[in-house]
Length: 274
Image (cartoon, rainbow, N blue to C red):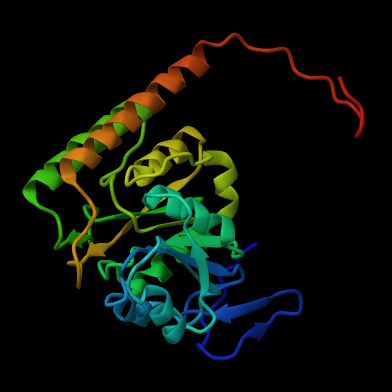
């Protein structure tokens, strides 16, 4: 599924005889295609900055448009004619990401915000972690080497408290919780079964990858200030939604533990009903 090759000079694809590997850096080559999902609503002014930092070796960009009233879609298509545009029918960031994930064809999926706060040049670090054995590469602004220019003291405190709650209740070791820059193998979606619509989606993902037993590696990441526009994030409102997710997932976990074990099913041939 993936391979790390000896040092190579970036250039044309390398034919190994069995697979084709595209050189990414002088020390890394990957076989799986990478999809980048960008949820966006009225982000036309920011997209040139976002797209500019995306590596040229990614497989596809999936833009999920949340019923924008500006030129978000037109700008995206001008910047990258092959962009895949998904029209969001629901509301909220979680709903947008779920729609974007469903449209991906790459083996690796990377989540990137459309406000210009994320540096696309960091994607290689996420991909490196995945091809080296991780299932989920989680961005962290508070891991050694990370940072943020965009968090108020209140948000930092809230993030720290909520992160501590997740670590304690689910046995995680996160240094950051509510951050939208993450990457994972697409097959992991079958294990985490996302079902929320708002900004709490990142927290739900972080909890469910742990409870599913997936291997997580944190990636130091720097969050920059939004370039244009105003964020739809509301610290108190969305903080309460995150807390509700934590409590709900904890209750669900206890309920599953309390269920009596069922006898194993007897295998049946295709077409038969047991």
